[in-house]
Image (cartoon, rainbow, N blue to C red; front, side, top):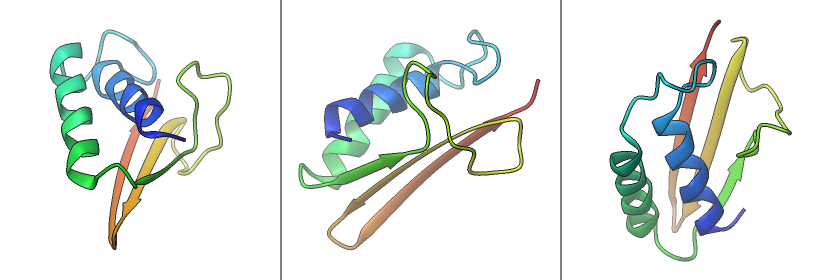
Length: 88
């Protein structure tokens, strides 16, 4: 996953709920700012992984929760892990 896809996915995950789309943690603009700032801090050589797709068509559970999303960024010895989960 590239930087653009990672920031897009993080923005989506932070601005919508995993179960109910209107229950996001942040407003869309703030979520986008946080995601792009994180990517910029980690740098352009960051490698990104996730257990889900932005469309929700692919998902590989990472926890015992009904819904979860995991995004990992690795750059120059720094590992950032963002884990979100939800129940319906």
